[in-house]
Image 1 (cartoon, rainbow, N blue to C red):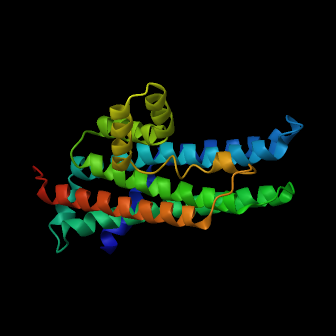
Image 2: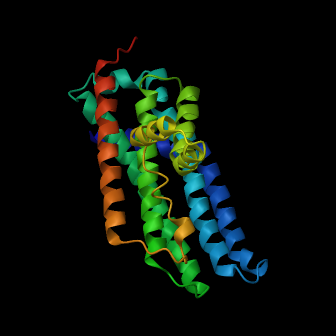
Length: 253
């Protein structure tokens, strides 16, 4: 298991695309700090929204284009045969890969969040609980996306995995629009279908708290608890089906 962890970590570190993402993220951080000079009335809101959006967008790209390649590289480079030939179960291979990539995401997003909160403090911007929960929910969204990419990569090509994962991400943020459309059309069947479809997708829209920061909407603690619980259950189910498919997958030498 230690070999899987180290191998996964080395693959992530070697990936030049990850460093490219981090460079651009750093450049956008510098840009966000200087944004206050461009705005007069909405200084605080711009900085808060910009940082939260950038952390999520850059890691969305990172998960799709870095993580989606890892399992394919194991198969392409034949290293998976060496790993699975050892006394290790397939579910351990999947779970350790998932956990290590999630750890890398946690480490970097944690550092980004600390830097973000420092910028808010430096600019005397109040740090609300909604800002903290927004960052927590971004991490949860990212590890769910990691699990989804891993799930699709067990039976899809690399390109198709990226495309389908992107579609899931964007559709999961659009259910309120789809429900509004169904209500305006007065189509009860479509409304029921959208609500049913919503159960099959991760709760990304409910975890998007950025728009509620400094609004008049009061969010109760139960809302956070329910979404965290739902996210963890959804994550567990995705990993379960990933292991189930991977256990039946045949590899050809």
